[in-house]
Length: 242
Image (tube, rainbow, N blue to C red):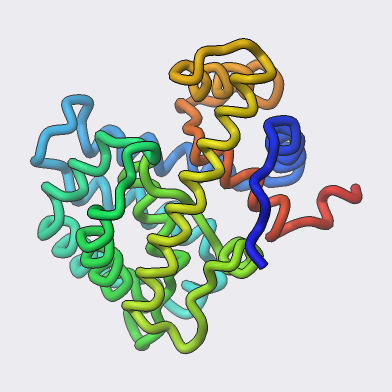
């Protein structure tokens, strides 16, 4: 059973719980800053691949430590993968989740499958769709959503075991559609209740987040807000009882 779409108040409530309990946010901030600098403000096609790999390593090793406890991914393989898909990644980096369309699926599938292999444990055949989601989000934080095992299972988009690349990629694309629907529902709920034009609702929500939840050293995206809501809802629901 897939999760129903949340209202604005529920999302902000979970975000406050997330901030009060999650102590690893600094790694996300650190990784995001490094990747933003590596990609450059101009968002040109040529990027500092080494800088991007460093940023990804920071987040994967801190937020996906259970998967990588027996060894990290091969940095050179990830660098090769990013160089191969540089134009595609930079195109996605300029977009937000509202622009996601069905005809994006083929390109996202290819990118996901290649990253799944590149981000696998260096000394084994183990692969992590969660690692790919975190990597994609860092590369394009307004277009690609974060996820983890409990979120994927709780929302109905789990890929199953053993990991099959094509199934994992399809599950992620379906999760993107679901996240797009959440953002659309959230912005319409906020706009309707606060008299805000729909086209300004995302910016208004993020401003409200800064004022009522937390002001951060990097710009918060609507996908990070949704992830914090889902993380409390599915990964750590016990935080609500504290």
